[in-house]
Length: 165
Ligand SMILES: [Zn+2]
Image: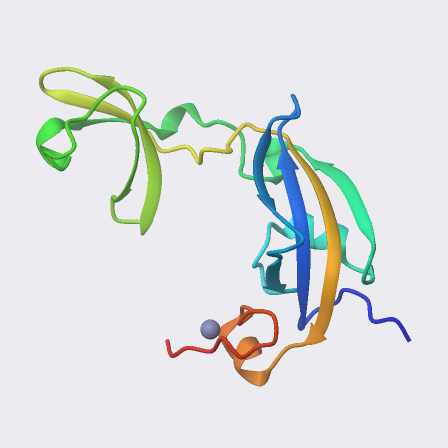
């Protein structure tokens, strides 16, 4: 019997993510697949929905509108902050993409404007407002280990890449 993608199984996939214009935003090659634990929000919920029921060797292309992916671009996600709240190094420049923790865990942000006193930052996810075009191929399906289910994520191709946390 062919196993199909379902909750609590570890799935190995190759994928290509493109924007509306066909530009590649992210990918995992067949030689270096992504392993994830299905049904545990490892991937976008709408991606996991599309994967459910596929079997090894199946490919699928689908589109996820921005609103169901990383959200629409939010004008309120722009914030003006005092320059002293940013690390002095590197010198802030417009267009710079950085990571910082503003109290909600580490998140990427982009500097959109710099004055002598203030810096305007854009906290939108880099893929906010982007319609996502996925092509995914199922390369492997296996049962998850108890530890993987407890952790809520996959531990590599055979579940042996364990760790403590
Ligand atoms: Zn773990």
